[in-house]
Length: 128
Image 1: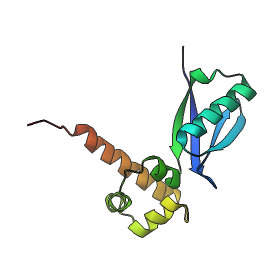
Image 2 (image 1 turned 90 degrees about the vertical axis):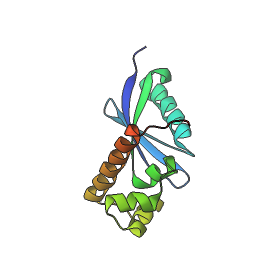
Image 3 (image 1 turned 30 degrees about the vertical axis):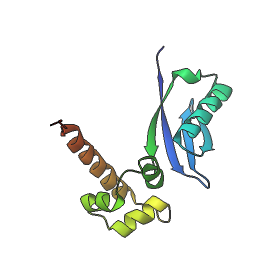
């Protein structure tokens, strides 16, 4: 069964997360208490409105900064800010949804996360 890749835009919601997808030039949106809940609801909407089998959908998530730090809550905001050369207080405001980053700031955060992920992929752990 071939998977249909659909970009999922995830943002801060009033309670939890808000997400939207475009499929056949239609915008489908919903909210969820967490990412799993949101994905399930959107798969059901795709089935209801577009007759898409939920089992064939593979979401490709794109996060706003709030949703990113909600999903990856193990990330230390102060450390990410340091590596991105962004004021830690400002990044906390982005992560809490109080302020929103410019496109340039968002790219800086994304590039920093990708650079950190590359470093982690190269790490090895051994047992003594």
